[in-house]
Image (tube, rainbow, N blue to C red; front, side):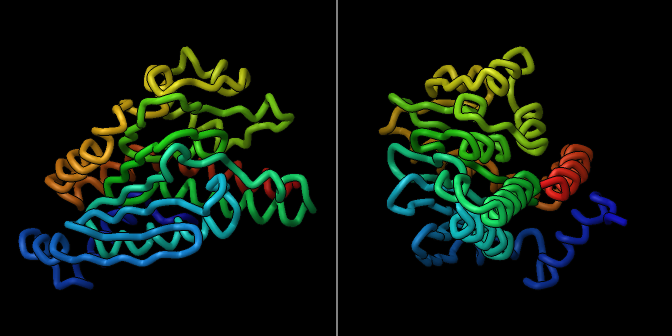
Length: 266
């Protein structure tokens, strides 16, 4: 039996407080003064002033292979312990190009493992108890667009970039977790075009569809992320986690049930 989601949120907050000998006022200065930076081949992880920033940069397309999704997952776990707000960004001009097509065109076992890892990462981001910001630094296609749908607030950079779910244009379907994330965050009037129609949008139009919440000129992009993070740090973390769990737990349960059935059918 799955644990009650509200209880889970409260339990998470109690464990976090206990680990730090937590009090609402006393915990914040130590978190905000902490600076941590680690780098991997796929994700640069940095904590500064209470904000954990995970920057994807594999030197290529930021593809959603197992190494990338595993690194992001580990970064979110660390953020829950080391920061108050989490943010995910890509490299200049490219956020994420989706699943690794080399793996998709390879053996079925590899495809299944990659998709399972990616699906779990998307659900972890969707249910991450802290405020989660995504800075969409450029193109965000397929699973990259789905990652946008998981965050609490999405800031895009304006420019000649494409954002959207192009799966049906390249002969791929969308799993239930992808459709449900899209259903949750995208404008319902545009849902058919955005999913079945494989539409790709400019950042400005993508705001209207519901991928990012705003599109910012490149020169103001980093400041916009920092300002949003500062605001989110003023909110009560325990209350925020509880509200997010209550808001999203029903869809999470639906997605996880469908994920298991679809994986079993592969």
